[in-house]
Image 1 (cartoon, one colour):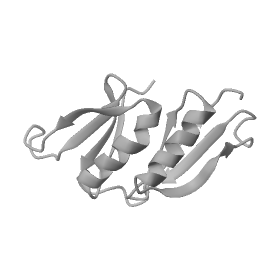
Image 2 (cartoon, helix red, strand yellow; image 1 turned 180 degrees about the vertical axis):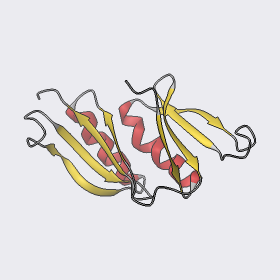
Image 3 (cartoon, rainbow, N blue to C red; image 1 turned 30 degrees about the horizontal axis):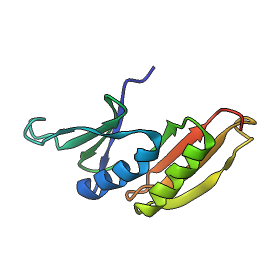
Length: 128
């Protein structure tokens, strides 16, 4: 249903480095960058994805309440790898990898807060 999603970050270079490291275990990489000049003064943007950019960060004023974004992982080991990579890249733990049966019995997720306090998750819905 969604084609892409994006939000603003306070420190573009720091956030770009964080997401490059945190999303690598999920098979996502920096795919495209757009300059402030290219957007007509609406800020620089970086698009991450696996082939085409479906997750974007941009310069500007972040949402006051933060956002939540979840990335689908191919298996539980990938969720674990995402969590470790995100913490190593400067994220803060917001929920260690594990089952979340209150969502459904096979929901396996991990949560980190990015440098701006956004809640970033990797999730696998498959049984072990």
